[in-house]
Length: 296
Image 1: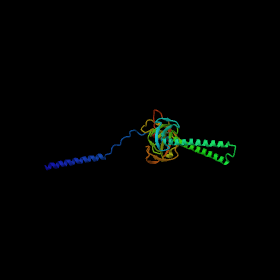
Image 2: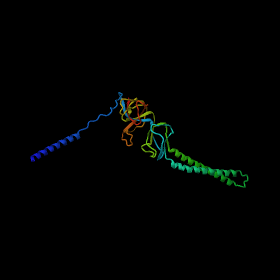
Image 3: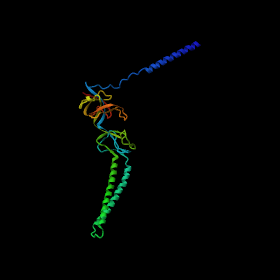
Image 4: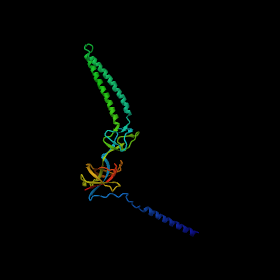
């Protein structure tokens, strides 16, 4: 019985060792490196400078701002709408200013009536021919009273004009002709100036603009007017011929093209701007990334 028990213990221990060995082998084995879902684009030139770029609207995207913090009471456009300069885009709550205007306009009425009354009294006194009825000093005082009333009326009207300008300021309008690319606010939401997320983004889609980042180590090889070809991420079969626009004269820190506010600064880059006209057969969207090759 003891011999049988010892043999059973031996086999159990051996099985445990084999299981532990296989587990260690599986954990130490490296998973095979998966192939990329799309092959990287091939360099079409014998000598070229490679760069990464991001699609922008012509003249850069417009991240719309608001003049003051406030409650959104109306959004007048939606994504893909074409807007004209001065067209209302969104409305902030102006009820407090409208209430102020009621009192200020009433003050203008009071000032107008007071001015008309004092001016009428002055005109009647100036028609008096008997100088014994009124002294010259009283007449000058009446004239001064009219001047003070005129100044008070002008001040009341200026206060109304100032408040009306503040009310008009709460209607956010399109700064130029563009297409609505993104709407990030809804009626009832509270918006604050200077936040990372703009309530609305506009852009001119007549042309697309490519902002390419050239590593500062190869920046001396970049010359104005260089021919360039771009490939959208994941599309290596349809090259996009690009037209040179300009070289930005200021070298900036490079950031990962994630769009986040916490993007990691890696190195410094020279930014080169190209553009192209989008076609229906090869749709491109603002914010997409491209691989660029600049022919030397």
